[in-house]
Length: 161
Image (cartoon, rainbow, N blue to C red; front, top):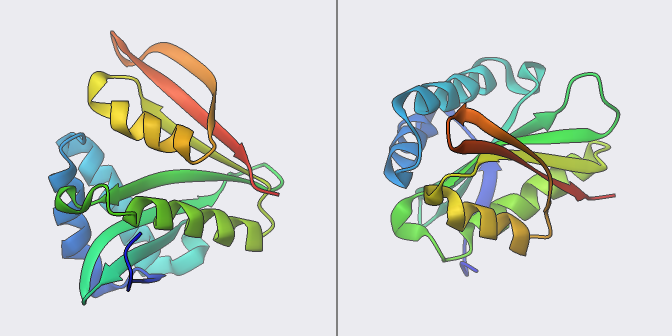
């Protein structure tokens, strides 16, 4: 775990760092990066009224990663984790774990009881899948060929309250 870091709400000055981070990860297509930044922009322009919460993890005045989550519409206490990304050069240093725990705590503080995470099944996501499993998430659904032939959608679930 990083020794000295801060998790704080994402600010306008962080947008370029978030773009750099989602591009550096290597798993996201140009379209996925565009969507990630749309959620960031919604947060920046509307705050929680956007129904998203976007926070960054910063160490030594450098943004290392971010998380975007929010309440799932039409549910009581269910939250979706939309995006979590850590710059490639900082993988394995505990930033992702800190961000995920932070999102869970923030969801719980807002009445959350369940967190859902969707991800792809392709080989490039093997590390991501293991990360979620190590954090106590279980796979509750798999939709074959969802994203494209051979790339299933996996839904992870965890009770937080």
